[in-house]
Image 1 (cartoon, rainbow, N blue to C red):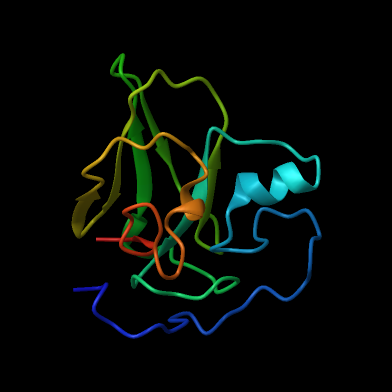
Image 2 (image 1 turned 120 degrees about the horizontal axis):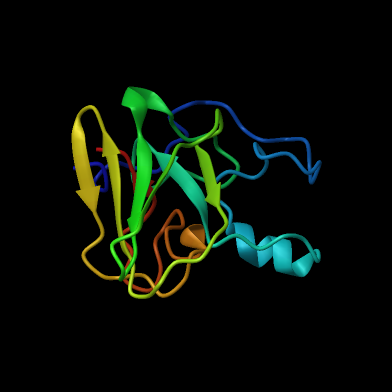
Length: 140
């Protein structure tokens, strides 16, 4: 169970370059919340994928095993979003509610049980988890 493990930065790589405006910045932090505070672009869906459930903010996530996020909207339109080298993913475009979200890799898939109401994924999928999320977005 990836959520039973103690908090750890599995990658042992941390973001330390402040707000330089790169897609690699601040893995684990709530993307749209931060962007709103700084008057920057908002994303339809954005977050970070990790190998375990309680990784700290600014710790790089994972791209292992071809992991990606799949979002399916109410009309059946599907977006597959691959993470970058920091494990961060983002996508901008229209999605009809409700959405169904899963993380897929060569090892299988891990689906959300509830339909999210926000695309600011790390706002709930934080180190400790919030609003019913058990912790981070975890690769299968």
